[in-house]
Image (cartoon, rainbow, N blue to C red; front, top):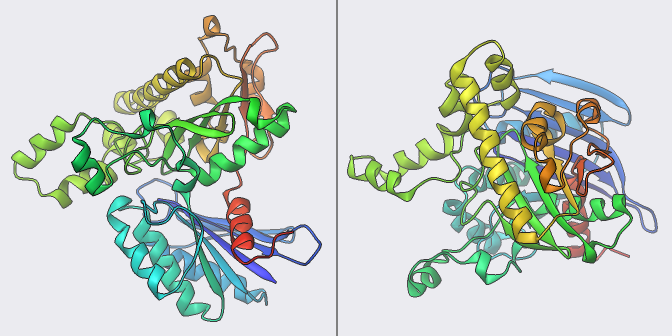
Length: 400
């Protein structure tokens, strides 16, 4: 049996095909990623892949996640692979979906009702589900939810200071996101450190080319996270503003902006692209700032400052930290960002090894803290697709 996993981000489309045989560990047949999907960056849109050791890259226009998924499916079909099931990352399940579900007409209606909870994620994932149903009609499909990892978050972290009746009636609470990544990284960090996850206090930084968040994990459970009711809150992101005084939103509305216009400003015109006016890609922003672009320099400084604030808050909340882990594309690739946020906090027991930080490679788990550092600093690639696979297999009753 071959299972296709789609990991639909805000500006990327990861994919893997696993071969699953009884009594054997799942084997990755194909892995790859569509990059710069429906986004504003200086780099071209492309699909890269690795098929049994043979790698390739194709530059191609990818104006939507539907287009990216269709190209990926055609690429996979051209290899002669049969695809028996498909697992999808679905960012926000609200209170309706708190565990993996098989996709049918009833669940499709429920997924569509969740669009407003994550307006630049959920519709994209739904569109990918639709194209898969069209191009792979015989394959069973499953939705796996990012919010599930945070379902047990303590009430003190989860609740907003709103009238209780209003919050309960509308589901206004913190949900947290990037849960698939955090589920994988927390377990992998425990393995790397040789300690039980139940004994660890971790700060996990999932920093992507689209969305980014940071989560405090205690004893294997989500204690608090930067994203909230939607994936808009928290850190500065590529096109999302992150934390914002609600008074600004009120002033925009009073000034005549519609709700849809405000949503577009906050989700697609803000963050790095809004601050820099140059690019939504952090590494491009940093490179331009080093050439003297003041707006790009400010964008980088605001991005790093917001991340430092959350690192400090979660370090305090946990009452010391066993490890800080940087993951996803920006987290594992951008040594300048890691240096900016971890380079001068020695008095907190966090000491960066500058040489190890610069030498760290994206595809390998690496310790970049100094030997004298009380808190380990790790660079670690994530594998959300593996978590999606495990969830799909469990739902199909194919686990050992």
